[in-house]
Image 1: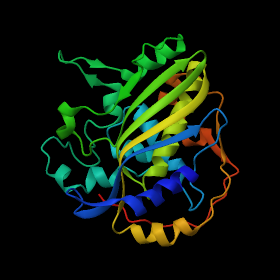
Image 2: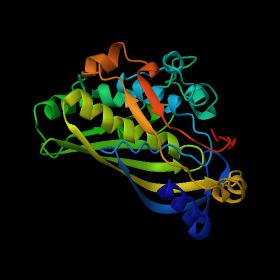
Image 3: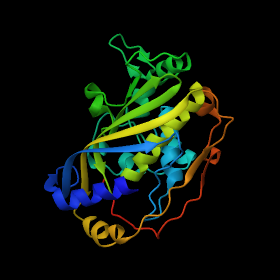
Image 4: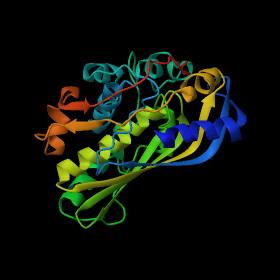
Amino acid sequence: MHQYLDLCQRIIEQGTWVANQRTGKKCLTVVNADLTYNVANNEFPLITTRKSYWKAAIAEFLGYIRGYDNAADFRKLGTKTWDANANDNIAWLNNPHRKGVDDMGRVYGVQGRAWRKPNGDTFDQLRKVVNNLTNGIDDRGEIITFFNPGETELGCLRPCMHTHTFSLLGDTLYLTSYQRSCDVPLGLNFNQIQVFTFLALMAQITGKKPGYAFHKIVNAHIYEDQLELMRDVQLKREPLPLPKLEINPDIKTLEDLETWVTIDDFKVVGYQCHSPIKYPFSV
């Protein structure tokens, strides 16, 4: 929590106003932020200075793991996070590659599970990493990237959290996740939850111990219509103790995550928080 609040304060005190072409709004912005999550001790980084809706974040990441490319599939998992970008993004609505209602295109998990090779075949990045880690292999390239510069026009949104690198030291697994752009008041806690949960899940299905997850953000920003709520409301609140994340121990393989796992297989224990804050969302 203190890492999160320190970043928010840093943006307010040191940030530079930058115009955002996609949204037409200004953002108070800093470059380079680093956060660390202790997955080994199960210190689940759920924001306590406002109510955080963690289920949607985990449901969304399950959709990435399954390589979903349609907002309807994400809704079935329990999250509406892709509805706006799939159906309200003017640039995407006018894109000739869009297949119709709820289509997201080749974004996020599609790239992670079906990266296109020059010969037209696809490569499953996630499967390669899972297989290697299960066998105790770290080739210094246990990387899953959702960012494909050659296909950005084929999706409704360039990935913000774009690359995940796993590292194995003995039987302890670490994760370093890279994010090019971060809406700190609204999106960051989603990203924190997903980074933490990704390491916890990967450790569980590969038979390793989870260590630390390192979260690196390039462009961290607060939109102009979010600033007052962050400065005058959320930062005035005292943080509360972090909760724990419980994951169904019957989840043992990547195939489990691809088939039967739902949000009901996750439970947060000991979550205390202040009241919700409704930050504006920019499409």
